[in-house]
Length: 209
Length: 262
Image (cartoon, rainbow over the protein chains, first blue to last red):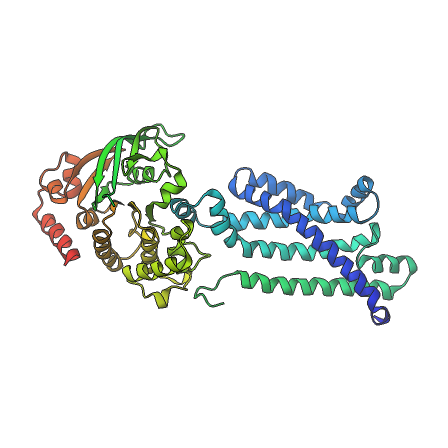
């Protein structure tokens, strides 16, 4: 506990690095997951294969995946970044697919009948309704990513994991505790913030905001 | 503007994987402010025929003309914006307010915000919903009858050249259905839009129709004015469907139609 109060700026800097790592990985992960999820929602026969494959990847232990990625990219930022992008695919793509597939057929029939192009159906009807589900997926993914990102301290010298792994090497329990507590607080804060966003993205029936 | 028209010439369509035509060589002509009811049992092709008009179902043979232009000559998206479409399940967009739902086609057509807003109020009044109360509601806060009123308003918002209605009142209770039917008759006579209305309900057909098209297994069995159908059924099938020759039914249909227009 003392480490937090004696080295607040060190912890803050590592926390910022942690957030940057997760945010960048999340942004890149969405670039892949949104089209994948839309594709899966459009092709119900292929969807189980896509989501099944992503699910299988998700079950690979993170240390094992990181070992392979370090072999490929060397030590540093890249292996943990790629690992986070890969892990997030399952939760993100699944939430996009579920959000879009959950929209009733009548709305899509009405949208086409009203003269919306396929792109307009996606942007005006499907995506806004899938958004709360997607934000839920982002929330779950972000929390998992914050946890996995602590391994960045081991392979890349980034994030709050630095405290944990340095503490292990130097036999400094205070550092380990400081890193763990900071990472946990970060996860809790992100969870709370995204819950608020999720709620505000869900329309209320009476139109009140 | 010229009176609108819808014309089918030998319209034939088959769904992929099916071994028979869903509609089979249908020719039919609708003109001006006419409300034509397609009547028949489920699977007779009446909804399919309706959906060929706005190209939601492609024809395998023959053609459909709206305002004397073959629909395949037109961009499907633009075509659909000029044709109103109402379905039984309504399909209001859950992410939009009532006003946004009603204004969806004008907005796709690029009307300015004020014109859309004025049109929305005008339409909500037309379908009997107070704009101040309903404008900002979400579809989830509407009853079935209210939702379908919004569905009708949405379909006619951009002054369509034709109105397609696929069992629009099939899911609402009898009292609401009668109210909606009454308003539809009034709206169609005001709009002067050619209207195709699909139902399997004989009473509804007799109440609403200027002409009734009886369909069976993808073909037209008879086209006639309601009471002509009753007096001169073209086949045993039609006779049985409308209970031709039964005076009690006749009185009921006459009275039912009168009451809707009183």
